Image (cartoon, rainbow, N blue to C red):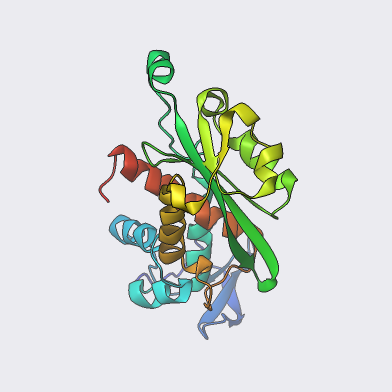
Length: 249
């Protein structure tokens, strides 16, 4: 434990008592620079191993307060760290695009698209998760969170990499919105019996099982749309890396 007898900012030993912190500790204020500090601060730094563990727990079906109890960190620190993790996710979702154009021409790309229901803050505030997946590599190539309108479908289409928009055949369910978004020559609206969307429907189940915010009956629901999107993106980026073999499952 460090016991301070000088100001940590300017080094002056002229300071006075200035009330107490929210934890009940004696607070001091420097008379020279005005900096506030405590005489015996605790070292609350988080080790790199503990940060790595928290990153893993953020991808599991556990609430934020549950992570705080399991790891021993404050909710305030965890919320800031969570936002840092979400912000660091790349927009390309770590998607590995087809390597050589000849592969695309010989064997045409196949993709699947679907949407799943979620909510933010209350169930009346529905947020639909639109997802597109490579049917061969099982990588999630794009996603969008919004309503279930044609505009949201267009935003999903705009997020899909150009190689797939130009070359891939997309299989979807018979939801009418897809017909006005995906070009007719690249679109196949099928029934579940055709088993052409089973991969993305299985991923929807994985997403709902692994991300606690997406569980239908939960107290871990998202309070803000930004964190809702960030949590989904954070899991998808890690999922794509596991599909590429860059990370263990």
